[in-house]
Length: 161
Length: 123
Image 1 (cartoon, rainbow over the protein chains, first blue to last red):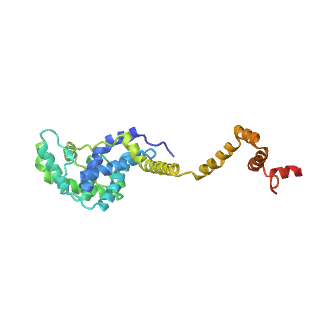
Image 2: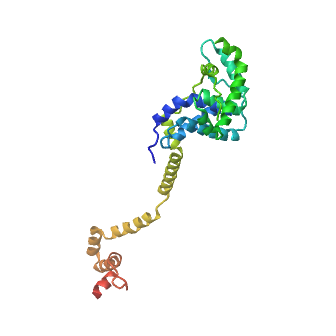
């Protein structure tokens, strides 16, 4: 039995992984308030636990995924992802950011979650496969299809950069 | 073999947009309160029940102590030195009768079958 995580260690993990996990939970739940509640439950739950595995990122994404899916099952009503803004837009890129959010919303959920984990969670495809409990090839194809769609939608914006 | 689906240019473009910060975790004190909420509520309920029981117990009249007071006060009056002296000077027969009566109240009953004096006499 290892040492229990301290409050400060949990805070540090939250600072580091919170934004990506919030984006992920929001993409699953389509409701920012619920997504934040899920995050808090996961991180406060860590206080009673021993040290995390070496690779904390897949563990945290998996924990958030499980809780988010439970919350979604129990939710009476879910808001639309259309109402949610989950990306910070750099100066002068408000329109482009809204375009990215729109393009992400249009992706099928199973492709969207792979994109969020890969881009903002900075996870490898193998790690994503562990979280989703599917073969790595499946993750790779979901990601490829998602990028194809995003490339087509955001083509003009990308070429301007 | 997994084909490499990466697109560095598109990925770099997407990464310019950072996900928003979630609201901060509750403070250490609030977390402690949340974790201890159930035991604290149970303890508060127990203290409340005990307090109410104690108040009710103290408000209930104690019949035993009243009986004790009633029995001891006349006895104390009867055995007061002044009263007994006065009785002895007024009428010696009355005094003897009173002493007999008091002795039955104050001294152990030697005629009782389970009395301590009887047990000592056997030894």
